[in-house]
Amino acid sequence: MAHKKEIFGVLYGLAGGLAFALTAWGWDAYQLWRAHWAYPLLSFLPGAVLALLLGGLAGWLAMRLRAAALGALAWLIGGSLLGILTLWLPRWLTPRLIFWLEPALQGWASLPPQEGAPLLILLCIGVTALFALIAGALQFTLVEQATYSQGDGAILLPMMLSVAVMALAGILTDSILNINMRQAVSSLDYTLTFAIENQDKEVDKLIARRARLGAVNSLSHLFQIPHRIFFFDATSSFEQSRYLVQFEENWAQCTLILSNLTYCKPVTPP
Image 1: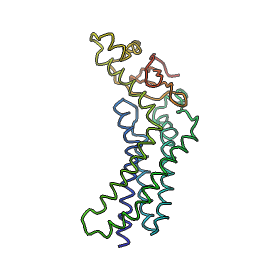
Image 2: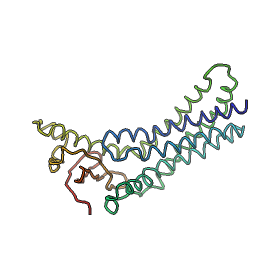
Image 3: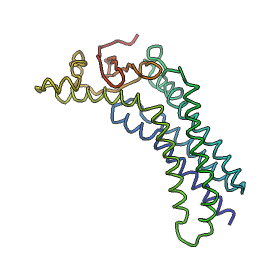
Image 4: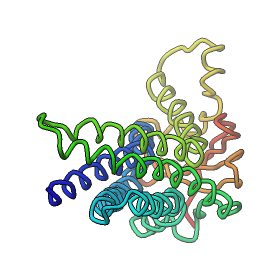
């Protein structure tokens, strides 16, 4: 019976870890992929692996230690580590991987802004630790009941509760860290895609103004070439941000204020 409890504990933790990964990094990766962002999975893949490891370990320890308080502590530690990862992956690891994959960007593009990082880390840790603590506090009783239940799939309800709690933690951290850049990138890609699709068409002036077509007029000679978007630089809160758009051998730099595209211009790597 003790072995069964530990297996159920692992399943409970894996469910929570996966839910967190999908909401903290997976949704962001999907939206960036749709917006032609280069390497959209670079945060999600390591994040998912680490979240599953931390969740599974916390879930196993909670049942292995056979004490609700110790189990909650294991989840609290795991949740705190997840909070650190939410900032460390997109602001530190992913940009360096992109520089390694795209040597042309080294010494040209900047790392994401680091101002306010300690405060953001504390905020994210506060969110993830709180919800992980809730998941840990619920686990011991829920898994105990599932272990002794005679019904098939008794662990499914505890797993669903773990998913709900940790998914909410992921949604909140995503809204803290990722949403401003994602909205800017999506806005830029919308204008580029609209311009490409309507290149040889007569577009109503009001629609063209709303789509900010004037901002990409200087790039019209590149519209037949597939594009990828890279981060260039930004203010600390992403109130103003600049992105590089690659059209095979050609590059452009685009500036946005919040999610409003102001202008794009052709540029050449140094």
